[in-house]
Amino acid sequence: MSDAAHLRPAHEIAAAVKARRLSARAVTESAIAHIEATDGRLGAFTGRTFPRALAEADRVDAEVAKGASLPLAGVPYSVKNLFDVEGVVTRAGSKINRDNPPAEQDAYLVRRMRAAGAVLLGAVNMGEYAYDFTGENAHDGASLNPHDPTRMSGGSSGGSGTSVAAGMVAVSLGSDTNGSIRVPSSFCGLFGLKPTFGRLSRGHTFPFCASLDHLGPLARSARDLAVLLDALQGEDAGDPAQVRRPAIDATAEIGKGAAGLRIAVADGYFRRQAMPEAFAAVDAVAKALSVSRTVTVSEAHRARASAYVITTAESSAFHLQRLRLRPADFDPDVRDRLLSGAMVPAAWVIAAQRFRAWFREAMREVFREVDVILAPATPFHALPSGTKTVTLDGVEMPARPNIGIFTQPISFIGLPVVAVPVWLPGAKLPIGVQIIAPAWREDLALRVAWQLERAGAVSAPIAKTREAV
Image 1 (tube, helix red, strand yellow):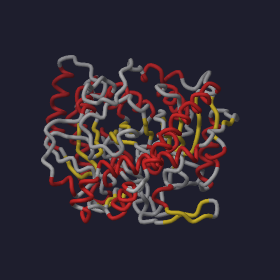
Image 2 (tube, helix red, strand yellow; image 1 turned 135 degrees about the vertical axis):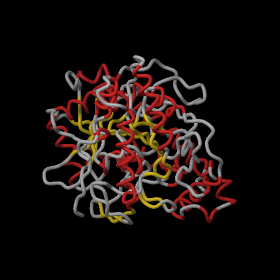
Image 3 (spheres, rainbow, N blue to C red; image 1 turned 135 degrees about the horizontal axis):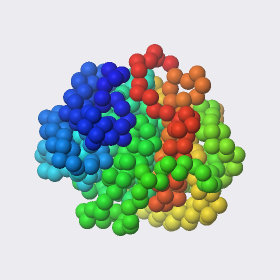
Image 4 (spheres, helix red, strand yellow; image 1 turned 90 degrees about the vertical axis):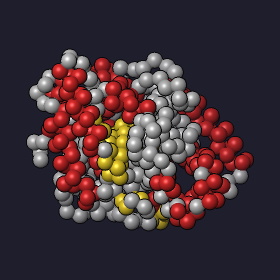
């Protein structure tokens, strides 16, 4: 299996298919065989689209034979099951949505992937309605961590993390509201990109919190993220939140590396309430970049609290009718959070939104002094499945919400972030570091990620069966 075609990085698969050294059909058949052999144990897929995949692969081979240059030719991928896929019910991780008819058309980003030559293998598991950091779903079961199946994959894009880390697909599309791409990237040892809010269309996807939802890719290399970002950009009149601005050429920029960039490590809030491995990972990345400068992100704790208020208020309002009509069909943990959100005073939401505007301006000031900020992605390695509490700085607290302690303040104002996977000496599990850039400068974060990968400081190996740790 280590020599199987689909296990190569996405950009290598595409190059081989375009050069006709490899067929998209062979890559797809290899990926299907891998999914059938491994997914029963790991729980990544909730809807397989194998007949479609084979048809798409044959179309790619035909177009390549005619001279078409497809940037993702033959690349096998999965999508979180909140993306519409024609002919598939968009579950969004829920029981209630299963009563809906199948989607009549693909989500905008799925259409972009198809146009670029990628091959869709199916929809993957996620936390119910994306309100989750664990990868555990009450209706479909957990998507497990391929590096240690006794551990969480992270959420809510858990199936995306599982499917890529296990080598079932080369890349996946997920969503990130408060950390749902960066958390599974950290737990499963992947490169993940949360673009700037408004960069990519959210057309024909099931929302969680409209003012915080981002869509983006997970992959096994920084270059793959750049190629994916370039393929996914495009104006969609169906998404009013998308900002109309010129696309960036991330693939052309990535090779510049970190040369000339002012990089700093976030201190204060981002050096508290975590296990030692979270800080050690940031320090390892900083050392690889010869970075000693630090920067303080003022009021990050209030940013996290405000993000929670807005998330719970917006999401509960969206689900209010479902809560009234079918409360028993929710995951009880998700239902209770949504019900609590319905009781948040309007004055709190207004205060949170006002603070949001202040925090956005404060971060603009920080980025006048630095170009990129390094911070932990999660406060610990992947936890054992079912963990309910963790102790951080001597305080026992609920595990599930505090997995996102470092991701929430950043997505709160929509900044672009690349999560990179660090393997500390002797560690059996990876842990992620956030590379945070100013709005619309995904290219800067990708450049730093690429340099770290080239230096061997970060990597995303396909998971092998490991003993529990």
